[in-house]
Image 1 (tube, helix red, strand yellow):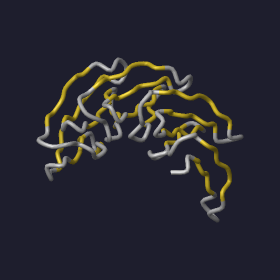
Image 2: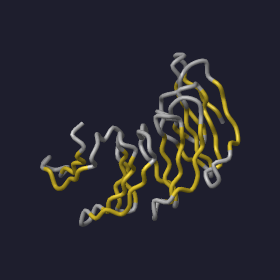
Image 3: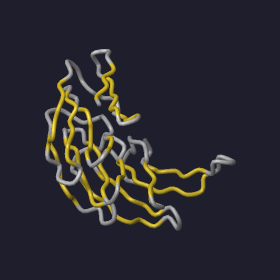
Image 4: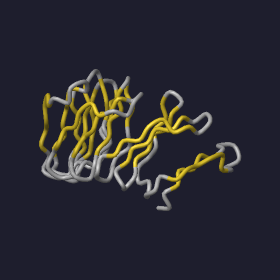
Length: 169
């Protein structure tokens, strides 16, 4: 909760570098193409070049980021406390689209074959077109979906607070 991102040497556990975000960092970081991406309670997603520790961009949502940011192709996807799934251009940090849902999004998105999937606090699993943010389909669970969906051999798995694990082909 100190608002500092730490990069540790995996061999000896010593701190290699780090930086302040200005707010608690409450999500797991993602690494892709030499950048690390992380979100914070103040609603800012940051991209930092690992080599040289060079800030690439910052994007402010105006609300807490509640999921890991998931890079896929030239996009990066993440959820917010007030119920948005956000898609940014991974190179510039520019907004591509937002998709609003009732309740929050605490389920990190999964991307598969041009679609992005995520669960909502309202119990809905959404499948969106990753390029446009258009809703393609949804499934309503009786309870919240806070777990991160995942794919195994083209089958989508996720858990719900109703105590069930669901699988879709």
